[in-house]
Image 1 (spheres, rainbow, N blue to C red):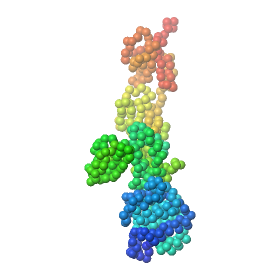
Image 2 (image 1 turned 90 degrees about the horizontal axis):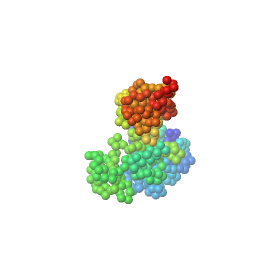
Image 3 (image 1 turned 180 degrees about the horizontal axis):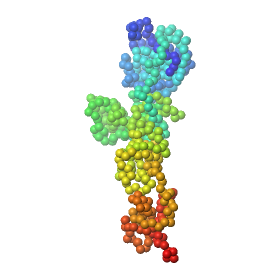
Image 4 (image 1 turned 180 degrees about the vertical axis):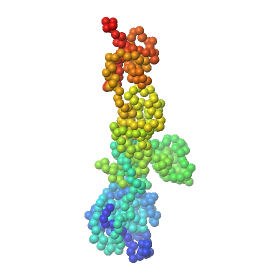
Length: 497
């Protein structure tokens, strides 16, 4: 917060009533003449006193709430010819010379439809409010600028703070940056879905749309406006009729459509305008309908572009999606961490799904136990609370792999000394290269392989699951968790009898 903040107006404080309301004759709109020029000269004087020759555009807005409504909006929002790149040059963090900054102040005084904060970090700020109220903040008292402002016929008043200082719309949450993890996830998403849709909001109420494919993703990324807010949406439907079938009965929605040249157009409409918009879309190659309520149909995930040094300096935030909240939670996890959760479901393929605080992690079948497990339900049940160790946190696919067996004592070292023993056990499985025999007298006992070459000649091809064989433990490979058995060597040589 700057120590010196002045409200600069054309309104004489002597013409205010006991409630502070102005009762004089000055109009609440710009005169487009000498008074407007005086405002701009006052800003220039304060900037000179603060030794500031550039200003940064912060939180730019176009149209909508940026237009106060006192004067009719103008084409180009008063920004025409100010930015070589067009409207996308009016973005958060853009540094402009004082001359351009003064033209932006002029556009805001005239209520042309564009608005922003103009600031230089910890040194200077200019905010234009309703009804020709101008707020100038400085790190210095600016005595010369105050005298100059008064000589211009304006009235500077010292305040504690500007009412237009940036305040987040909602409690601050961790904003997902468009960092390496974001782009890796986006590449994976595009690869999984073959195409997705990227919304690039470079100012409030101003966006560009990009249909992403594996071939154009990097080219689109290179053209994005600095500090833009990004939202990733499912791809448009090539069946335009099916896309229109998702229209609600009433309310505001955003229509998107792509023509045969690949140009993407969007418009916001309510139920009274649906028919007219649908007629415009009739010849589109693809279309979609997006709800303006993120709770109804949120994007897949969102982010804000950091600066080139990787630091996220944009102060605005996207509305967090379920994926964004998952990502924030995953950032708190690490490999080897022990977590407690509740089993929510068991899949037929053997995966066990566990809720670990609002996020669903998975335990693969081999990670349920050191011992053979035919089905997860032999170890866990839905609703059961378990404690497991995190094996991996995949930020790209947003997956967490758990291990239940990591919390159990490893029984394999107790099996290793049994190498050379002769045991009897049932055949549990028959494969083309041999049979598996259980060597422990328990349902989840360890099994070893008797290779075809190690089967007794008398056994031949008549062995079946459930048959009991006498075998010798030839080797216990702790590294690969394998037990090698032999039926032939289980028979002691004649001279040893």
